[in-house]
Image (cartoon, rainbow, N blue to C red; front, side):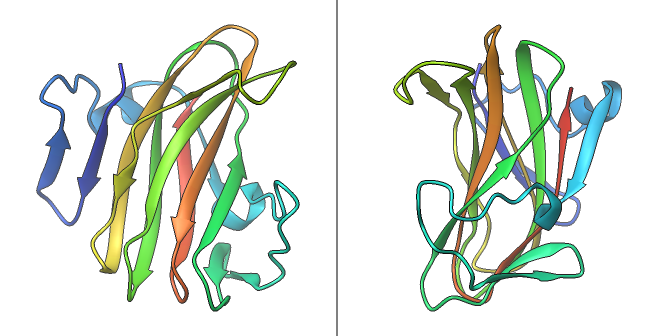
Length: 157
């Protein structure tokens, strides 16, 4: 099951209607959390990202172009993984998704979860997820416009 939500303040926009695991799912299961910069893996895919800097634990895109920021996560096993990303959009929307990658084999062996996008400005909590099979790892990817930040990530083990 793939899903995404955006939470801004108190109300949430949920898509699709089959969403069974809203924000409460993270609270109900053991979770891990990380500042975005601690989980950030710059240059994934051979791209120079020296202009993505740290700002109090957040990744701050000081580049002149949108950046694809990859975040490493640690999971204990297979199953539906719920992710919360806290972002600060400043002049453009931040969008994120989770992906499951095979521990070995070609990059083509991947599963991409639904993407969720923040408003063009302000803080937002983005909720999304992906089903992770046995012997797969999970990675979070966010597309971050110039001047915007990813503050933190929380996910179930």
